[in-house]
Image (cartoon, rainbow, N blue to C red; front, side, top):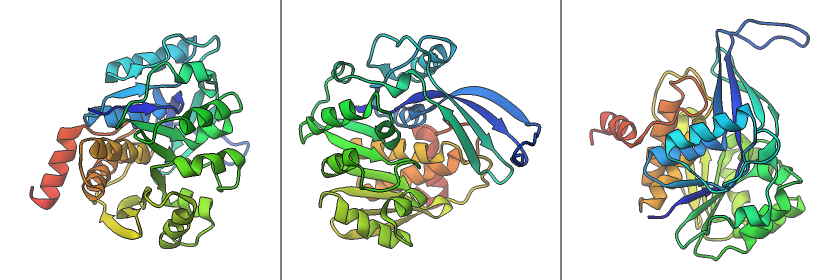
Length: 309
């Protein structure tokens, strides 16, 4: 069975629910607040809950947040690849969800923003494995170059998954240019794809992405409640979403990405994996918190309920 090696950042989310965000200098009361493992943890939890063994190949810190991160990964059965903790603590993200289910973030990067070649060599990437690279990682000077060098040295039999995130805005940066030819699977939401390519709609974004990426690359672009689009070798397919009542969109994209990779690793076609990923994302938005991906049985149940088997 392949495994997922996640090279992104596990941080701790301070999750708060409010009716609306305050104006600058203002104040509002939250209906709830809790500390939860977040960031790359959300993708890893989704994959692990859907049958794909996961290894966290990123740093974790010394302190209360590092302890929370390790406890959460242990509870999910996620293996921690880098055995020792860094001298400083794991970082923190304030994640605020308003009444429309939209979320806003303010992040502080800690130990997870650094990695060395020796760290990345802690767990070998083997044939058929999936290596998950987050665009956030390319922004951390203590991590980016070592990570890209390591990814470029991987054998072609290892699948490289790239998630640009909201902060990688174009293909022009040198590290991004170096990484593009090695990507096997692109996963993003529509806003990220439009921003990265400068396109005006998803169809144009997929075409522009295809011009930047290897010819065999599989692209998945999420389109919110409408589901997602998949594109490979010039063929494009829309995979419809599932109708649910959303309460919190935090972590839905991560659930989609983790479940999609898990499906591919288990031999599903891109369309089948996308349908399962859409179901997982739909269930995730009905729950509060960042790591709300369902497990295999819940995904199966929603698909069966919707399609009758």
